[in-house]
Image (cartoon, rainbow, N blue to C red; front, side, top):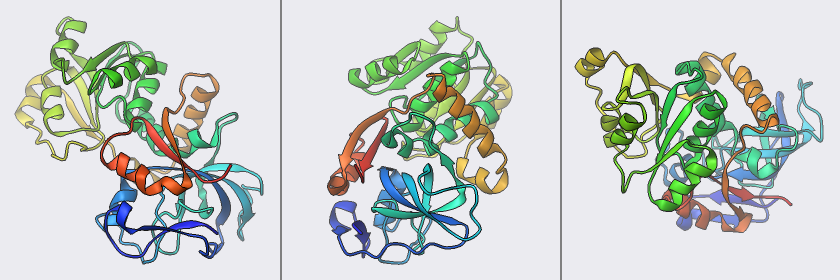
Length: 333
């Protein structure tokens, strides 16, 4: 089969090699083998290539941590999936690192999901991490309510674009931020009630003006650093700041005296841990998201679809933050 291999650590453009003679991965009990239709691009794939991820795979390995595929074989003990089913989720490999940037991949039967009716493979490939993260953050950790004002940072990105749609579906008023006029237009297209270009506007003042000084009930923050610091200036009494990530590169320091004085909460969300610590939450989120998709209230924002041969260039664009929403690699079709 064709697959991208990494045999030494370094930047993706330097170490990725497309091979035509890679053996198909081995099917194990409790797994399914899929023909990969599309694979999402994710920052962990860059870190895996560089040897900077928390998992250190055995070389050579194939990166790619999120795919959509069609089941072509089921392993021993698997009765919930059949050949021909279209599924999405995270692949697994004996090397310990994804394995999705290949024509065939192995997936754990109890860790994948059925593609919603009518969803294209490119959308499904970039669906699970962004939408599960945002649903669990807003509903389970943030207790979002109809009528809330939700401030979504990095709204033109993967998780941010999902958060805008999920918050709107919950009946919230959404104020979203992004950098530059083009990205500001994306926020509006995604359904944000108020779009803010943080290069030209002060989101703190925008939130205060929109809420008559009360502030946002929820802040969805995948950025951290200065964005977190300034978000504390416009959080409402008993509001919740959801910590999703640190794309700014700086971990913010929560001033607990300020948390006390303004009576707000700082709430962490590491979606991956729910698969181990609270696995019952995952199917609840999946069902809710499937219903929202069927109702036309959410749709993955896929900004770019690259052919399989352009993976190094695609990951370079992702690493340089030249992409918006989710970018996807088309493997088959």
